[in-house]
Length: 162
Image (cartoon, rainbow, N blue to C red; front, top):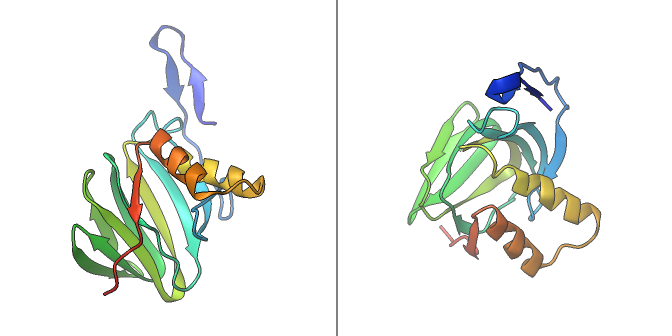
């Protein structure tokens, strides 16, 4: 954790570095393997960030939440469905979705790797908690919906076809 007490002013942020492969394990319900790289706690609430490694065809359900997301594509190609429109980004590209818009994404035929930033931080805990219930073999659609609700994420349904 990158927080220490700072007397009268409360928690003080500390700089930190994570090497490749470091970070708490996290996951998405539909197959993304993730590592938590920054949390609301470690950034003073500024942002959360996870690195996701996705198999070919990995897709999220359509969902909506109040926080913004920004993806930096490290490898592969991703298609983003945002407010009724398909958008694509390749390695080196960026996609941004403001809070409040219905959206989802899917990895291309070779899969991909991406950084997902959540602004402000805190909702990245959803992915850490999903990993925990996967490890406990306790995943059910109801549990994922409940967990999403705890983080302000409303699951809507499957992505539409192109």
